Image 1 (tube, helix red, strand yellow):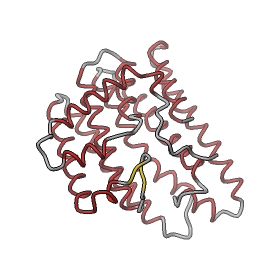
Image 2 (spheres, rainbow, N blue to C red; image 1 turned 60 degrees about the vertical axis):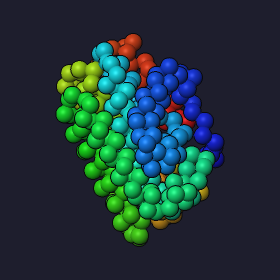
Image 3 (cartoon, rainbow, N blue to C red; image 1 turned 135 degrees about the horizontal axis):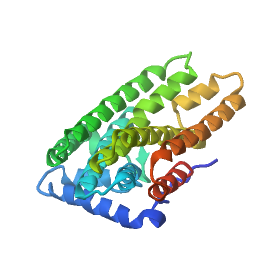
Length: 281
């Protein structure tokens, strides 16, 4: 399969109203810093993107109870953490383009990239200060730690000649799925979900995150230098490995859907739609 590099958001048709509110609150937070030297770089870094993770947060909140503007503030923090990770990730991977435009570090240089990422962490801390439940800050911090561990693990494994299947899954679980998991779990927390609902939605987020990355790697494996490529090239039977990955992709989709069994039938429809749109993007 060939990946379409045009930044088209397939979620707009189904979730336009929620996405519009996510966008509005996100840019309200950004505009608080119009006085800053980081304002223009910050806007550039945040432009585009499908807002999948913020949407997971809001829909998770919606699935278990009533929610207010806190859900959208937390969704902004999630998107800022994702943005900050992209800046660093593109430096590490020497990526020249992102979302159909020049990568941040190519446009602004390394010094501004490092400092803008630091500045974004300040924005996240400011938002968590507005939110009453300390568990939100804890989940964001946990996600940030796991994402960093995942990035470091990927760097270390990139030079190994004995990359294992489980190594690849561990990187995906930490680097990508941890923020999906935080998104859905925070949504449940904000809406007052009980322990069973919160754990189920956290698992849902983790599984959809793993499926999302596996699908992305299956689409791009011939074109990009990723761990997945190394796994395929080092295997004596690459077709079998690809088939195994495709089966695993579908298994994680099924596992994500199974976590929604405890959610009210009507409430979980949006999450199921999101799952189908996101992983088959």
